[in-house]
Image 1 (cartoon, rainbow, N blue to C red):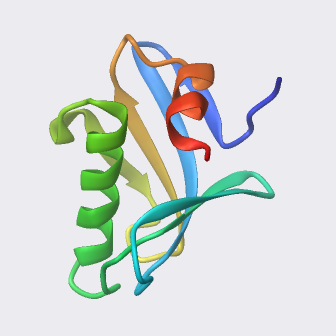
Image 2: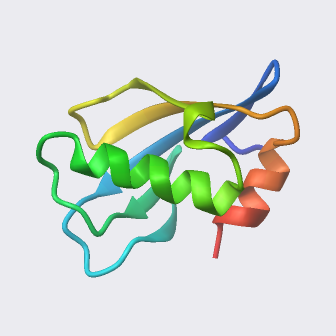
Amino acid sequence: MSRTWCSPLPGGVRLAVQIQANAKKTEVVGVLEDALKIKLHAQPIEGKANEALIRFLSDTLSVPRSAIALTHGQTNKRKLLEISAAKLTPDGVAALLLP
């Protein structure tokens, strides 16, 4: 099954996410077009939402925060992240993140 929001990279995966900040709780909503929609319980100021996103992905995927790089969209709702973890595959990420 094709997952446009999660693609394999050498030694990891690339995630396309769309975030909604200021939510009541941090949770994955589902796939919206070609991105994974995630609600964050954090304000979109001074990088707080980006930090919350990286913390959430780190905890959920069991990888260190240092393995997650926000490569595009620092100040945008749509973001691209690269996760360096050889054990992760698009199917494995989907199994961990999708409700």
